[in-house]
Image 1 (cartoon, rainbow, N blue to C red):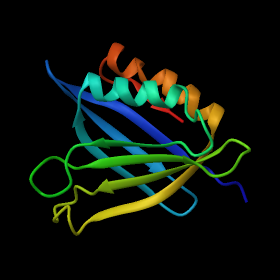
Image 2: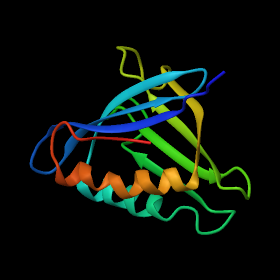
Image 3: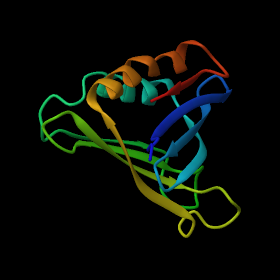
Amino acid sequence: MIIIAVLSIERIWEDVDFFEIEVIAQSEIISASVRSYTTVASINELALRLATFPQKIDDRYIWENGDKGDDSTPYVSLEFWCEDKLGHIVIEVYMELDDGASYNKHNCCFFVKTEAGLLNSFGKSLVLLNEQGIGQKITL
């Protein structure tokens, strides 16, 4: 059985001070997506951290976009850590689902696994979201 794990971020709308992204995450048992607003600074921070992650075996990094709860656009977070000393990385994906119900009740949390080199390449490519405009999609 081939296990496909995917994480992608696409710029789908923009304004002067912020833009909308669609985050899609898929593991062997679940696929979920969310649209949320973000900023150039937030994407730059994520790109910078992932381009060199991990520095040490016990490194952890969490990227949060938005605020949890019903008072804002859907929240998404990605938490990264090393699974082992061989360069395997675990990404815990948390998304509030924008399906008409309360974000507090409709959300999901699951793991996507990858390798350090692939994650570093993904991180280096993320800056293109800030430079290339609507339709730019970066996939792990």
